[in-house]
Length: 136
Image (tube, rainbow, N blue to C red; front, side, top):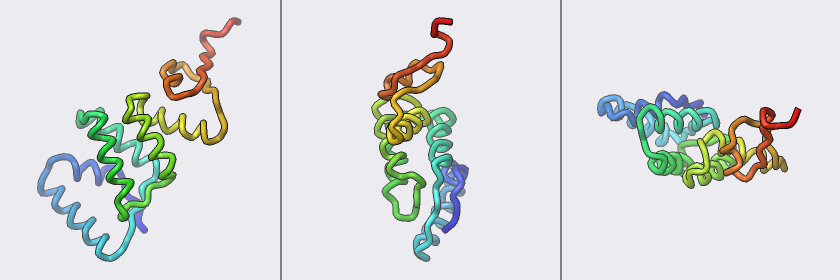
């Protein structure tokens, strides 16, 4: 198994045909050898962020791409069930992918409250505790 960096996926999706073809050939070669690529959750977070904010992709497009990544046997995605659940929330427009992932991890750990300045976290099923809005 090899670690996959987000930059490889971003270059593959950049629209530069020559680079995309070379990366595809490399990935096909790995697949033929039954090798796998380890995709840490940080790579998924980075990929989602740059596709949405750097490449201007719509949330639905990003979600579909990550779903394909999750279902492809070439890729072993770290914390896959967490990423899948976060992706559903993200696809529903409940928050950034990173916030969705944090909320999923919190809920799975039995945590129901979040100390944050980000009021939007309440959309993710957590009670928001804003330290700036508390009585002194």
